[in-house]
Image (cartoon, rainbow, N blue to C red; front, top):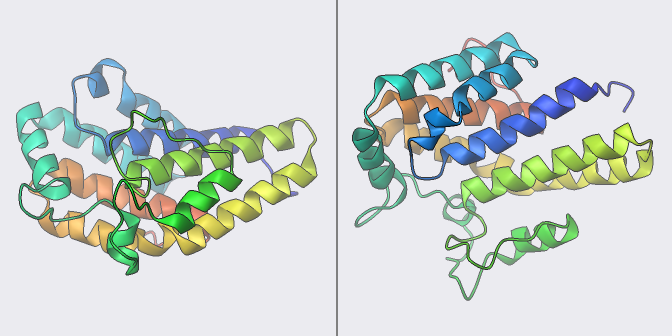
Length: 214
């Protein structure tokens, strides 16, 4: 980990958290808490491409009324009959259909290995895109903390777990999911969110898209 850069590691962790927030129901708090300003600041510390994605996402949110965003969110991720872009890893990995009583065991095992607990009051399945991005945040944050405190072995083990998680889960299904969001979205915000998420996850997986492709 000779290339370790603490400020960049912090920015990468922050982007995981901010992208995760965008996959919850759109709300006025996005603007009130300056979510997109924070996202742009983090992305700018990493690369011009990511900064461009963050800028476009914030602009798209500001340009659209909240009710229209909520309608698009519902169509894409909830239904009412069949969601256009189901936000669960199992929907894209060919895994058995999970339920609250029968969650996807592979990703849950990785969560346990990484010390990631889901609140009992959380009403979504554990392989929801927002949850997997939160887990990516935790892994990135923990690896960063281990490096900062000189615990190199812990940092290496956490990075290995992160590589497994991206290779077997989030990184393996983000492309078809993002394509479905892009195809089904009626607002620029969700098209930009899909492009940003796929680009970032591919970078974290070590398989970035060509910068000319969006």
